[in-house]
Image 1 (cartoon, rainbow, N blue to C red):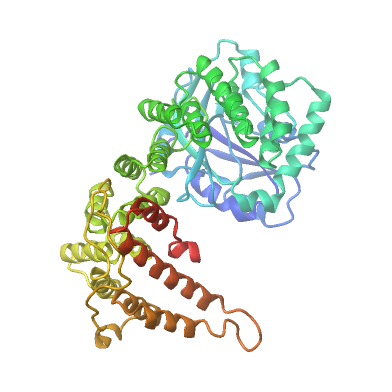
Image 2: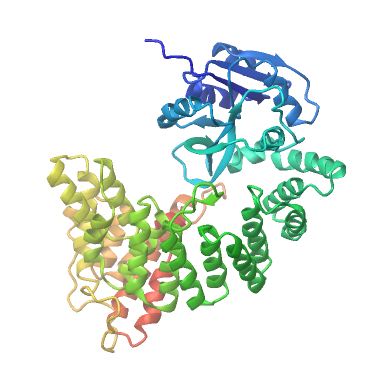
Length: 559
């Protein structure tokens, strides 16, 4: 059955967007009543793709003015609402209905949508920031975009209708245009800077131009110039302007990058006087204080961020500020001051809030392993991370194996196999079983995170050497067999095996063999870690040895 008209005209400007346009239009074509595409000189298949979706295509020359190009599309629109997007964006599939509901509320002049800026080029990548932007507004002849670059519609709406009601919605647009590869490939920074210079020549006191120029300077790591523009923006901007809160955050970031911590903290405090519920400023203040070694102050700031939770949705916010990033900051802080119990608590909290946070997972595994708590890792992680799909236990076990926590990996796989009656985990399970059996004779039992072992003399090998069972080891890869040899106490043989592996280090053509070098590095790291863990059980300098274990590279670091 055909849906009722939405009353929405989608208006876009594009140039050479063949790689992105299909994704964008596929996400929104069933929601809008018409698509207006202004093309400013494409030489690829952009226009044919647009027409395939039934778009009206207007071809105009590019004159270095985004507002002019946007307004060319508005003149052709026929429906009550204008939705504007860019080709490197897509509408969230779950929010189409809410957008249609918004379009039925004619008492509003416009709607803010939540623009999620991704760090990579697909919807499953992490979100770096969330920015509420006015993206849908009533079609009226007087509503026209302003600004050569970073064109805006809000000023036009409020100028002609000072009492206009604008609503902040939960509708999400996913934006990929500032992922690293896209910025480089399109040379967006250079283009933006050139247009902003022209704009500032015409309007030298315009705060929005200074704000946008500061953003481009920050992308180029030119923090001194960024500070100048941010302070110009603060001087000329109305404190009620939608981006005013961002001026404080970006100024503090620049000062942090310039190692001016005290000034940066003061800017955060100044910002919180006007925006006390802006969680990002509390989180950033914690980051600055932690970097300056002000641990007590940093702890208070991070705790305040976690207490407040995510910033209200009318703020531009960093994903994780007030949730998993602030909890992770507390974990790092507690680990730095030597409180492993609290560090574990906050790393767990970070994983509860964001199960996919690998940094927190890596930290948690390393800190528990260095305290010889490997036997507890699997149960603690399974309490924290809900394994919802059959693939997740194998993924978690793989990460544990990369950290050389074979016993913990084996426990995860055995529980998953028992529940699912599946054999898909058997290859990884077999490897972990053999390696776990070998390590058990080498590493001391579990110790409490804060427990101090009694001083004793370190013995280079366990008192009883168990010759590896080569029938059991035959199924393992060569490097895993060498690992088992070391774990079973035959360190000399294992080291000789590594020496043979990497000798010679280059092929007959003189080209290095990076694969063998990485394998050797992984093995030597495993041997060093094993020796340090064994020694830390009886050494008076156990704290130093535990810290040494934590800074050893793990498998992914060697890739």
